[in-house]
Amino acid sequence: MKALIERLKIDWAGEKRRMFEDRAINGLNDGYTIEQAGRLCALLLRGGIDDGDGRQRVTGADLNLLRTRLDFLMLHAMMLRGESTRKAELADLCSVLLPDESSECLGLVLRTNAGKTIPLAVGGNLRMQHYHAALRHRDPVLCPVGALAHWLVLRWEICGETPPDFRRRPSWYTTKVLPGKLSLAQKEISDDTQRTWLVSALEAVAVDSSKAVHAMRQSVARLADMWEVPADQVSSCGPATTLPTGLG
Image (cartoon, rainbow, N blue to C red; front, side):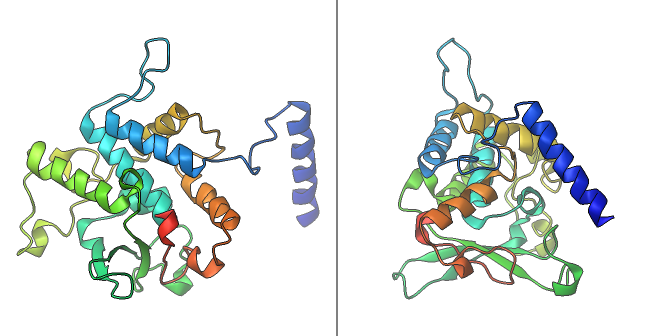
């Protein structure tokens, strides 16, 4: 079986060469730069840009645009998989005061307890919490904390969604951070919808990536390597995760 699998890999590599497949795929330039990430977030804040021939590359209601910006920045800053942000609920979010940073520095923390890369042996059966964290970014356009604030204000103050009653846990424990529709706040955004908006945003800033929803994990890992960030500050598989301020 091992020999067969190895033979198939060799044959597939030869087929890709015969078909002139883009050799940049899975290479050093497969993904985005931090400058492209900034342009992408600015684009979503502006509500789309004209690509020169009168067409809008990214369009839609402010609701979809700001939801996509928050989704992108959470995936980027916390190195998450798409299912983590889709399934995230308000009750999974919390903040932690970081006294060694400054008097007002709060870390945004997302708790997860299930996922593709969390095996049952280390808590993938809901019995163990895993933590993913992000800090305020020096650039407000790239700040995941600010993006969360924008999103919640839009939902509860502008779009008319009834704010949860935090005195009653059933009122908000099942409310999704990124619902597909505000009228169905307990239902997560679909995989297809999440992918469609993220791919459109990436294409709008000319990002070439072999990935869609997971382009952020790949790109941030490459950026962290280029910036010589210690591996224990980047890994998103353990029970606790932090990222340096420069990444988010």
